[in-house]
Length: 120
Image 1 (tube, rainbow, N blue to C red):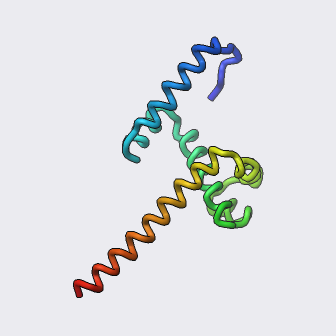
Image 2 (cartoon, one colour; image 1 turned 45 degrees about the vertical axis):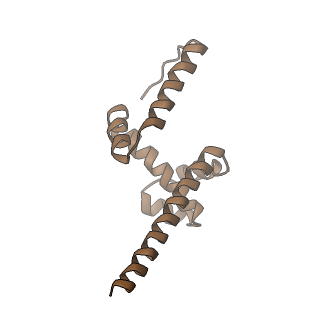
């Protein structure tokens, strides 16, 4: 994908990004996100984005560069590029969301087991 060298008017650029971000924020389900991103991004762009997110998640869990490289079929340079951004607020926010979801899943499983033990 190429980006034009011609710059947008700063106000128009702000409006374009504002509408884009708000539209993404308004999506309610993973299916809605999938449908929108599938239509807006090429398969290559979606894969690259998903792999970068997976790299950040794996780095957060302490996995080695080699393990991440092999598992996700990415280069060391890609892992290093994501590693450089690990402290950035957006990456940290995304990782916080992943951790919260994992925590909720763990507790849901525990609660199900508890109710199953009472009903047995």
